[in-house]
Every structure is written in structure tokens, then in C-alpha cells.
Length: 239
Image 1 (cartoon, rainbow, N blue to C red):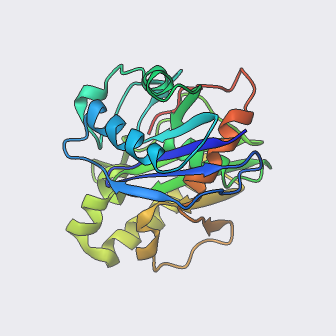
Image 2: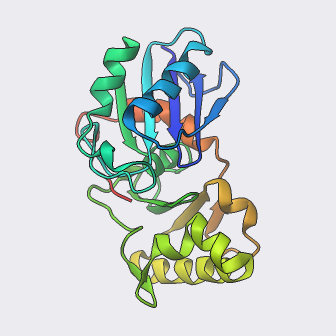
Image 3: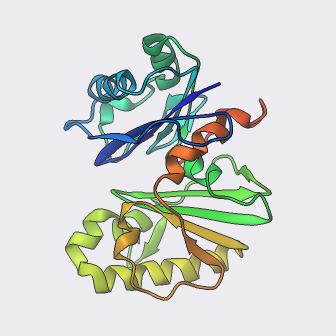
């Protein structure tokens, strides 16, 4: 049972085929996220990537926004036209394979969490992705990126790529450090896994219970998405 795992980001779309254990059986293909990142444009890129990767039996997708039962509720860093698009059904129809779609931080978390205790997963990319796991299961209706953080601004406004470019690396790192401290006091998590393309700009000393995870976790979690039981499948998670 081979899985086509797709990670949709605000700047790049990546795809790879995995074996039943989650090991890569192809190279990771990637293309820039089209601008504007409308549903048809993004689906076109996914179909193109899939055509280069050979045979697969099912599809897993991490999407940068709120997802409920495979239907997109928000896409803050793509395009407003994503609202209420049934991406899961669209992909299954166009690729002729069963598909599952979840929030991208959730999928990345599946590729990184240990399944022990309370685990927070953060992704620092175009925006901020976040999911909280309890004993290996993502919590439903978890929303973080657009909650107030500092000075009337949200977590995403101070930790996303625009903040990095606007404020510079030093101030951005200070804001990440403050966010980690505040989130620990909020959730008292046992560990935090930090991924996303902007982790390469982190210079702060991370807490003992924090670790950087590779970007490929967002792909490797695609098999775990299929291992969820029916109660977990399509759980609504927001960023």
C-alpha cells in the first residue's frame, strides 16, 4: 500500500511516495506554490507532481488552514476561494485514489510525535501552524495562530514569514522565545516539536523539552494519517 504524501505550503508544494512503514520510495518532488494559489491552480500542481512519482494507492495531504472532514474552512496564506472546497473529494476524483486531508501541522505532528503525554507541534513557515497532541492524538478544534499574543498582534503576525522579514532575525527570535514561554504556561506541554522552513533562522537556545524536526516530517506523517481510527479521521483542526 503506497501513499502519495503531499505537503501544501504558502511558498512550496512538496510530494513523495511512501511505503506502508512511511519510508520514502521516491525522491521528494517540489514546485513553487502558484500565485494566486486558487484551488484549481494548486490542484494542477499536485496532479503534475503525482505524474512524476509513479504508482500509489492512496493520497494524504497536509493543508495550511482549518480542515473539517476534508473540507477547507480557512486558507489564510493561500486564497479566499478555498472556503468550503471539498479538497478530499476533489483529489480522490482527479487522482482516482482514496484521499485524506488534514491540517498541515497535524500531519507534520504525526511524523514527529512520540505518543507520550502532551506534545505541541509548531511550524514556522509562511504562517504559523500549530497542533496539540494528547497521547498521540490531535486535539479537535485547536486554534492558535490567530489568537492574540503581544501588543495586540496575533501569534502569526509576530512569528510568520512577514514578521521575520519586517522585524529582522534578532527580534523575530526574541518573539519565538517569548511565544514558547507563554505557550508552556498555557498548556504545560511535555515537549514541543518545531518544524517549518524558518527553523533555519532560529538562533535562540531552545528549552530542554523542545526540538527541531525536519521539514520532511510533513511528508512522512502522511502514512500515520491513514492509520488513524475513524473517530480521528478528518478531525477539525485550525491554525
